[in-house]
Image (tube, rainbow over all chains, first blue to last red; front, side):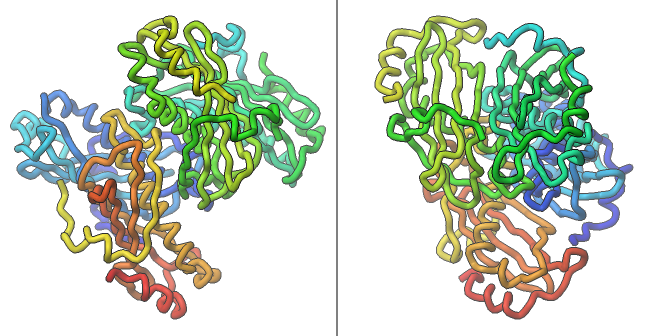
Length: 142
Length: 142
Length: 142
Length: 142
């Protein structure tokens, strides 16, 4: 099993949390929540984080583009219990920033994800607007 | 828009209910919950109903097979609010039975589904075992 | 197993055909192509049909809305072989029309679908424009 | 946009190739192939690679478990054209190995993925069996 740093597995460090119900369609032939279904859970967490924190409004005509997603699968997740998805900003660069996420089931970590998001004008990367930087600060990992 | 009988749109007639969170991945290019994603919601409701009501144990070595699903789409469903899925048995035949379902969002009906399930020995239909019939009775639409 | 009329299982009656590859993600815990994955196959066939036949252009500012989909599951479909999806118009009404579809794997029917599509101005049903009726004619089941 | 090493974008270095059709259900609200749908494409490529190269038989009672997947998104992918997925072994360790993949559309790279797979006895990592190492060799990136 993968071993991300222990500090990334502490739910209390993530300011944004939401619960997501598992679905029968998430199961694969092994009877576990499929890896790709878990990728959809992380995506859902990112979108809710970005909408919920008001980043979208601060973007104006700019938009975010996901350029990389890395997922570590730590343990099997099961149906029908729900998942809890924790999301935070990990670091902020000039035109991109990184989102760190942790999914738990019944209190145990099942997967982590790190996503790099670039701010673009639709064609090329542009510097993150200052109001967005200000908005991001309180959402950095504690 | 489709118009199923009004009597099928009354949530109080369904004994089994569960909530399901919508996901960003459910959205289609129109920005609405996709029709196929809604089919996954109904499937999830059926499986939870069948597991929750103890039908699976009563089947023994037999198994259920879905032979038809008909869905009426009544209104657009949206992200990120949750959906409520109501499920009941509609009718019981010799070797098959019918499940009726209703999905609401914010209290308004968005879709209904009718599913025919056949009891098989893995190869061909067999009569529904009596214990299963007894189990089904309290779950018939009120 | 469901038994749609034999006349609906004859691939030569459908003017529009396309192949679709199965995916590992389509499999469910039974190791078969999942019922919801099959719904996505039919949806894909409908969209390709509607785009390929030029209906979209004939719609102008109007749009199609799917109001009901009924699927009969005839046999298990398997990974990793491809599926062949046959699509035709079944009937044309005032403001709505019906699409009939057939999916084969290795030459054997695995599922059929019937979809009712309504022409709307975004809010309510409107009569199908005459140019669209003319376009639809050659795609009716033979 | 992410910039994986140019050497990972050369399709001729990958010994295993397959085509996969896009589906309407892969589209997200931006009208592009969704990131999670792309994850399903890579998963499909891995499974076909592992089945096609005979690794599964060489595993006997052991099994592979995916412990991490990292995807770089290089360009938007579109519906309805197909995708081509190239897959190779990148490196082989004691109990784990790494799969490198490249997806092209119309000849242009749209995404790469790196997956770490661990050989387990169902509970814990075990050394990759020698016959499997021999089987893997011809599939290493050229």
